[in-house]
Image (cartoon, rainbow, N blue to C red; front, side):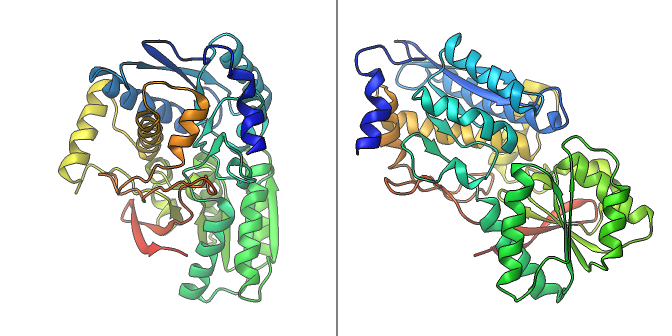
Length: 379
């Protein structure tokens, strides 16, 4: 309790930042111009749609939600500047859905030091929920947990013996590497090759050549969408048809839209089903229509996850009551237990001792030009 008291003590004698009688200001840091802008813009739009829907119904306890989105360009230095702006100029109440592990690792300490809730970042890094901190909450299954489980499932299915890894050489890639190594260790195996690349890379010829020379029979990809497509395409161009498994960062309709035939058969990890219009339930179909009407484009998995994080945030606000403070919000979030929604997302549950809402993912595969779920939730 001493930690909680210390975090919130600075706000006792002053108005709560980002909260007025009629409005709540919320900050989010996305890549809107850099190598993963194809993720950042849909996340922002999904969040915005959910906020606008809440506002149309009168807001939350009479307060409308105001989203302040800043562009990091997937650059940690720019993310720090964006965080400082959101804290000092915009005075946001909370940070919701910040995108990218390098961005989150650089910006999260500033938010926490300022006493602002840091919620549901698109970076399932262990540091986003552990060690337990009153202001840190995470929805998404951690890289280490779900990649360990996914690797073990792949070994069971395919009998692979020589597993290699292509990883982004930063906090994201290294966190995935830990999960892959843990899964292999449980089966008495180790990585036969691990090859890194720098953020924003476009040429993967040398990395694929090294993995092929190591005679890998399964390659795990700690990549994002563009790099997933480029690395798989490079392998196929050279005639190498090795099985590949990508993290949830590559589980996107954009992957098969950009990769075409080259990515057919690619395995991936799903932490939430893709919102395909074909075969959608009525509630999902209605949401797809609302999104199209608002933004003039079809939604994707990142749009759905942006909407999802905004919805869970709103559930926390509703539970906190009309006298909103960071401390009341945290206490309310620790009681939130969501139900399965029309997206098919998992249930999220938080408590006083656990701020991680979900620990599991599912295995998927690109079949006939779209992702198909091929397993239940992996433990």
